[in-house]
Amino acid sequence: MQGLEFEAVDVDVWLQRLRQYNEQTPSAKALRLNPAVKLVDFYQNTYGHGVRKDVKADNSTNEVTFDTTLAERDSLQLRDTPDVLESGLMGKIVQHWLKTWPSA
Image 1 (cartoon, one colour):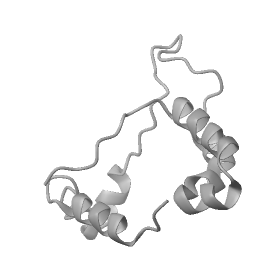
Image 2: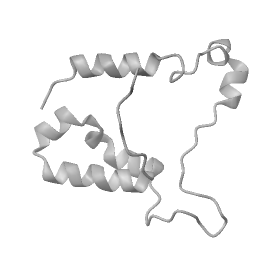
Image 3: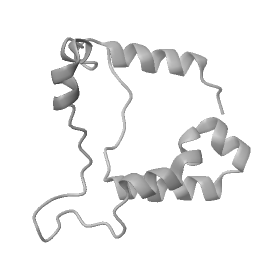
Image 4: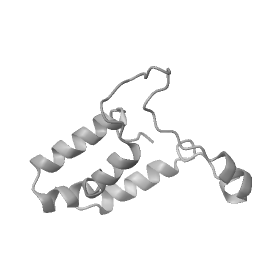
């Protein structure tokens, strides 16, 4: 199964594009077609890094990483969860969304 094609970008680039989309698209349509615009301020406060820099002085990046090590240690369900990409689960979810999501 082939998935959707998309461009992986830095979180700050994504936030900038999301804000531009929201500014250029009528509000009701923007919310219907891209509900993430409703949460752009939350995303900015939680994941935004201000001025985009690929590598900071301490050699860290702006990449967001979700570490589930402790949750997996305490949860049998998380430890035994199949890889959503390799199992095809993500593809099934995306296909369902494409069938049920309102079109432009």
